Length: 212
Image (cartoon, rainbow, N blue to C red):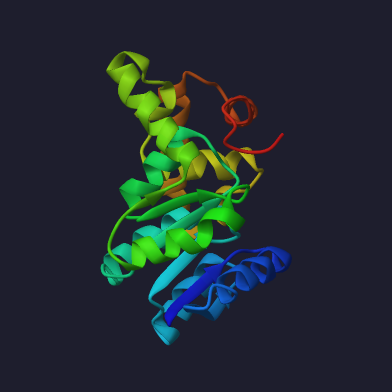
């Protein structure tokens, strides 16, 4: 049996994913988590074979969790599960060490296959993710956007600022100082040629990084 961890902040979503996994016949959900820190603790405690991680969770987000899991448990394959279908998220997830990327819209049809494939050592990308990466390659460097100039941490800070989180909350979530958050904010304003948090929020919404 393939031992699976599911991390998502919505209990109804977790219940649905658990049902899909356990109806497969060759895998079981051995742990669940409602946030990023909980996911890290459950991995340490239960040692699953595959981790399915939602990208948008309170506290540590899925990208940060994936980064830490990749560093601490390099043989543990992580599948990112997300509402986002933007190429930035696909790229950042792969850079963080994810072996799989599927959207919640396609999860019922693809989740079981994704788990089997990453458990066998292969990568699994949803059709939507594959199309986005192909489009990016076709565009080449000429098609790069302002978002491409941001580091993964800058992208994470941008999302949290756009969602109204304070510098202190962001610092606590990522284990960095408030001064470091200020530095990231300054870099964001400079790179994106924006003036304040309100403009950062508009930019994030326009680029579908957060919901309006």
